[in-house]
Image (cartoon, rainbow, N blue to C red; front, side, top):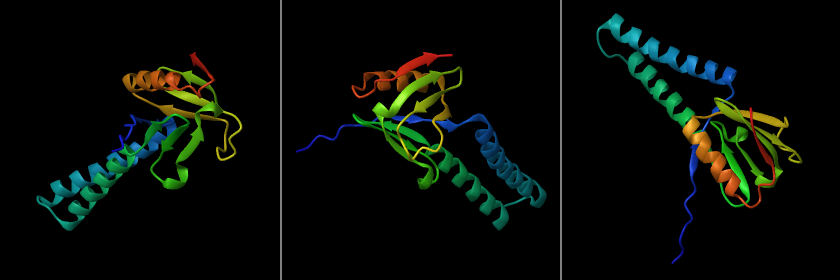
Length: 145
């Protein structure tokens, strides 16, 4: 019988501008749905369709997560093409801010820019940093801003 090692999941949001645009779109769909309900005083196919779209957008945004195992950091995004898997030893520096963190990655060709910022809940960010520090492959620095 094999014992599967449980991976911890750390939720994240992209940098501020992208997050504002995404959640504005999502809340816009929600308010269109509410307006449709109030205008027609009942449910319609438009209302149900907008509610379905709203639920899909919230579900898709909740799929953004980090997974850390012994060798790799998996950064899952909404679209599979935007997801990243890179070795933990490629992380040169992690800058911690008030609302998130920034990775500086070197020697990884699939990442278009060397720095990538993420927004995280402070409690989640603390747990993520503690897990990252425990990784034996992690040789980078952690800097508080």
